[in-house]
Length: 89
Figure 1 (tube, one colour):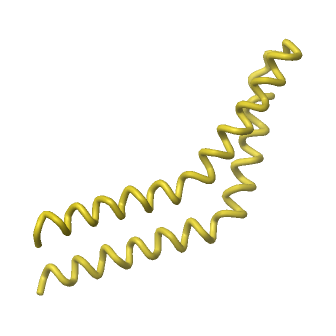
Figure 2 (figure 1 turned 180 degrees about the vertical axis):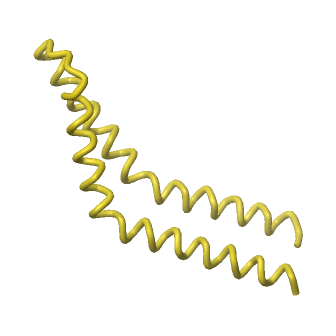
Figure 3 (figure 1 turned 30 degrees about the horizontal axis):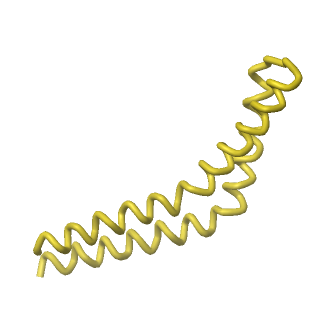
């Protein structure tokens, strides 16, 4: 197995990771920004006001984007396991 294959596996690992976590991170970032602006505008500094909306939105994103995330990870692991099988031969 040459170093090109290791680089290809590393690239695919990073791409799969980015595709899997991006929806959740973006949702958390956007709702955190919105809540932060709201708190700054109204001078309400309540910790639960920042936490509860993020929790709800991230949960909704996981429900909506869950099948996509699972299919991405499944495809990645199938590729990795097929590469492992090919190395042993």
